[in-house]
Image (cartoon, rainbow, N blue to C red; front, side, top):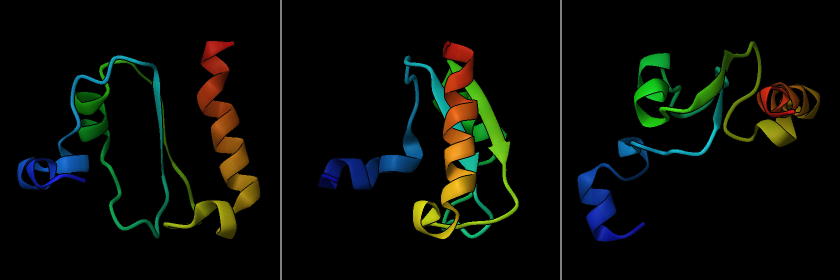
Length: 78
């Protein structure tokens, strides 16, 4: 991250991302993106879900759950 991105909000200041986006919120994650933020950041939000387990290392902690979320997120694009 550049100094400019860090000063302006960086990752948390995402907006106008035009590609289809999917957001899965894990309860142990450092930042749990609320739906209102995801909708502003990703105008083409096609999937949003809060899951019951996992955290920042979801692929390691909950591989089956993460796989299900990735599949669900891409399903609308099939």
